[in-house]
Image (cartoon, helix red, strand yellow):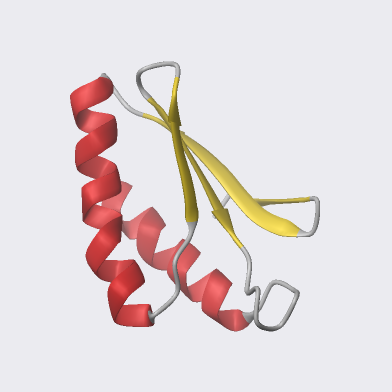
Length: 78
């Protein structure tokens, strides 16, 4: 899974081939997040890197929802 806990949030950075692929990857996350009613913080930087941060604000901690969304996001790359 390779997600890290940083500042009490689940985080992972993905490196894509270029900016277009980074944006396409983010667009694939949208339906997963909507279906789970759980919305990550997403940062596209350095033109091809996407950083995803998951945290359940309502619970003020990382929850099973975060881990499940992380797993689903990982499957987009596999």
